[in-house]
Image (cartoon, rainbow, N blue to C red; front, side, top):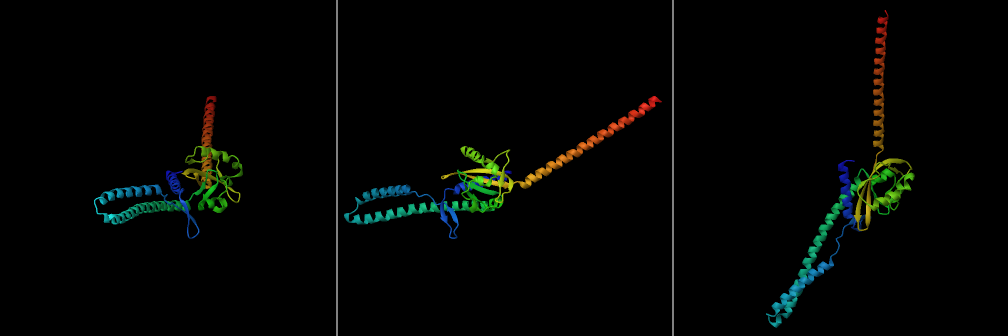
Length: 272
């Protein structure tokens, strides 16, 4: 795996984590989207408003003591006006913060969704129970399933039967110390398609920590062609090694025959 590919996977995991705690809205077309709505801060607003009101009361009482009695009504009208202005400024600042937060999160979501949809690797997201949450188009193509057929199924559903019994133990061990890494180094890893056929796979795991628990993003690559190339390379290497050994043996035999001829001629001369 290249460093660039690993960096892309980590970036996607970070984008998913940034959007994993967002609220759910529904697109007019029916698609469920995740838009980050900033959390309200009513306590902070109340404190700002109360402090501003107390400051104004203190100032107005000082001014009122120096003004004629008929200015009492005017003072109270000014008090209401100033409090309304203060409340408007606080609300404006807060709404501006919300708009900036929403814009940034939506941009991150668009980037994550674009990578998810266009990735040449299969991307499967599972929760801490091993249940499938999302499958991108490439993952659906690899396994031959539609996403709705996989959502809610255990991840073992996509493994050959011989791996299913022991995989939950591996999954529990992974969640006991979650980290981003390659899956099953030195082990055989295979996926099972809908039609029952299997393919060798390379799987990279990335962990996303959310308020709802840890999510695992698995990047799945079909390495059938790579395995075929490796077998062909080994075959060619073995064949070339065999030919080299044959040439070496032939040269050795020719040298032995030549030496036998030399010895025979020497013996003939000595006998004569």
